[in-house]
Image (cartoon, rainbow over all chains, first blue to last red; front, top):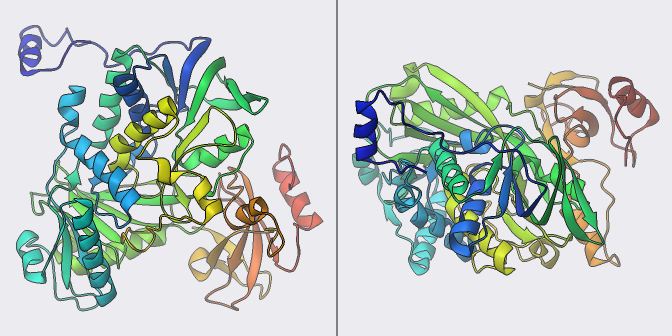
Length: 414
Length: 107
């Protein structure tokens, strides 16, 4: 793999850019791999990457039904933060945020991590109390968040209307090292690094069955033939239940649609991420100048990657009240992704009833921010059988009633 | 946007008039059941990509719960029917079979 650098750009500029090579290979699948990861989204590719980088396991294939990073990795609002209430969540999300800090250097691929600061608005008394509690918890967890008043919010976000009338801004939780990153680049950077380590990334290859024998995984059947493996990691977000059924078990997961949309590009007007969870909307400005907006999920099971129109209307209406200047903006694009929701709104990184099969799913509405931490923990789980990052996120927590409740506490928009 | 027919009051309305209530025909396990059964009842869901039986409430109408057979992969609604049944009635099954001959049936 040729390294990307300023010198490489200069060299290629001298020869009409003819020397660039493909960022990753597109091989045919081999008969057998030590580890197969199903799902070439951020989480799947990060899992493969840290398997190779940290644990030296490079006999790995990443199987993808569509194209690399074409699912939720390419459909989110690119927000990165780690201001979670519960200790296990704070640990894995902060690990991810910390890895994002120098991910571009690590991968030799610019993921455009922009720790521009992230605000979660407190717009009701309950929300204010909830976020202050989160700030206190974060202080104990060693995560840098603080509570700021309405005037400080106005100073940071001049375009915001803090006076309501329906939901005045009473303050905000500020995470200064939260922000955004280029979502596609995260997938592409991991894919390039995986390919460089000799791993096979196989796109347009649909898994049609999981072969097991005596409660142990043997391999998978795909549209490109049978592939054997010792260990299988299912990292397929919204389709986790479909894969689990192939392997013969059920998951505590329901798949629903979550939508996002962007405006036409405008001049820079907001250099932080603002989340308004009471009214179910969050907004940031992309490097191109588009206002990137995300809303709430639908309530019914859905695999179509299309959401309901009234959620777009509700969120836009709420954000127009909070940011009056966006009322005349045209919306450029709108899209949906299928998110895998668990009952306690925390992910599942776990062994399964089938020996050798692992699942990494249940990230719901907030998976992008967790990609590096999730991959890091998952790789350790696969290679060593357990990981301090993932031990609390096992499937057994549902049987034991040991939930990691982030459904209300984190104020995540649902 | 989904359009559903309430089998209780007969009104045809858009989804904003209804509230979704998750998977239908759950078999309930309570005191005396095993841990696995109780966990399965509380948390494990079929979540199929395809034919799905689910609960809805006519929240901004007659207020009654009812059930719907719907394809989660196309959003097509096959039928809605009253909730006082432990499994999908034969006419609902027939309607689904007519449109999805490959469907493996209710399990």
